[in-house]
Length: 168
Image (tube, rainbow, N blue to C red; front, side, top):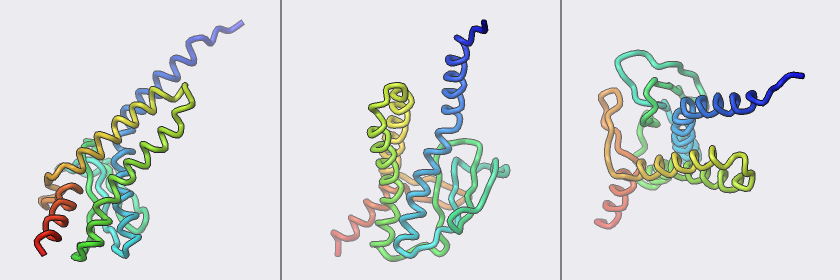
């Protein structure tokens, strides 16, 4: 008789390793997809989704989705949705800026709905934590540089729009 008692823990360990490597890319993609779909909803066409932080080399891989180029870079910190031309309508800009954090919250809500399945709780807790950190980090009013272009965070865009609205 074969003893497969180590098979289940080995598969679980492999799944955790794969999860730690791939989840940051998936989380950024979901966030940027939120911006792209919000943009499509208000009639703005995204040209490029950047997953990770670009460097001097080529992206790991790229593909076309939803009518725009998606580039995946080796360092899974940060991302951007680039619009050409960028929208100048404050309402559309506000909706697009909220799209990413809203998708982060949707992932958290889906995880909470799945919480009753006890065998998933550890993975779900990790996803909930990473999405909460991602949403909060994106709502911080800062800027990043992508390909020499300064890109404001979602929080900075929203804060600028709200400050402009109060002045008028």
